[in-house]
Length: 177
Image 1 (cartoon, rainbow, N blue to C red):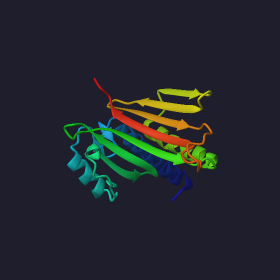
Image 2 (cartoon, helix red, strand yellow):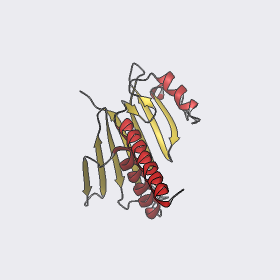
Image 3 (cartoon, helix red, strand yellow):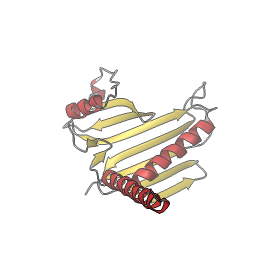
Image 4 (cartoon, rainbow, N blue to C red):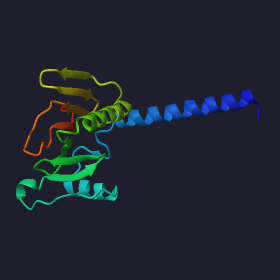
C-alpha cells in the first residue's frame, strides 16, 4: 500500500471515529433520562435494569421512608435513584466524600468527573466558583435533563475523624416543561 493511500485510509478512519463519538454524545444529550434509565420508569423496572447491568443494589433499610429510593455504586460514586409516590423515577443524586487529608484526591476526582461530563454533554451552560464558600458548580441544561456538578472544596472537619471534608456531587433531574 502506498504511503498516500495509507494516510487517506487513516484519515477516513479518524473522521469515522470522531463522527461516531459525536453521535453517541448527541444521543446522550437528547436522552430523556439518566445514563440507561428513562424518566418515569417504574421502580421495579428500574431495579431490574440496574441489576441487569451487573450493579449490586444496596437497599439495607426496612423503613418505609426508604421504599422510594434505590441505592448503589456507579462510576465510583454513591448513587441514589428517587421515585415519586407513583413509584416513577424522577431524579438521581450521585455523591463522593473525601476525608480531611484527601484534598488532592478530591480535586483529581472532580477534574476526572468534570472531563467525563464535558465529553458527554459538551461545554457547561453555567459555571460558578463561589470563592468565599469554596463551591464550584457547573450546570448543563439539556433537552430533557438538567445536570449539576458540584465540588465543595472547602477545608472543614465534619466529625472528629475528619470525615467528608470535600465532596463531589452530580444531581440529574428531568426538565419540567
